[in-house]
Length: 146
Image (cartoon, rainbow, N blue to C red; front, side, top):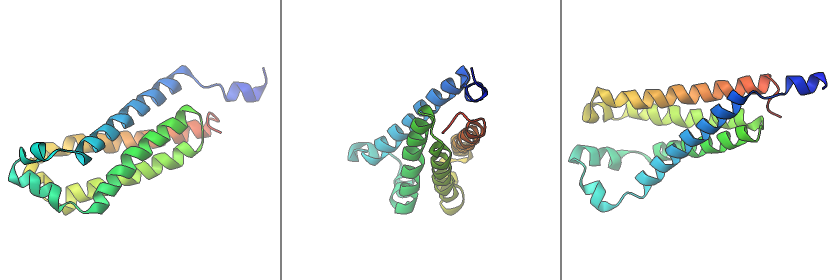
């Protein structure tokens, strides 16, 4: 076995993380689709304050959400086929996550309407997005992505 083959040998835990990343990001796509195609009946079951949050949200925030989740799926797929582009697409996805949450945390009254406990899951999403970008960067430096 040559030295290059040894360096590029991908450990099993890489595959585990890549599959978990794909599942995680697919769940994000499902959340996006569920929200995008929400029925009027479900929407009307929300409080008036929550309905106003949805109505007032700018289209760029919805676009950032789409970039975050669909970019995450694409990046995860690129990771599974070991392409360096995964790093760039994870970064774009992270930018979508950050843009969406800047609006949520600082430009809307989401925390007032939903309470401060509504901040926890978005923070988890930001942390995971950062970790996936860092992981793809690490995998690229290790020669696992081409």
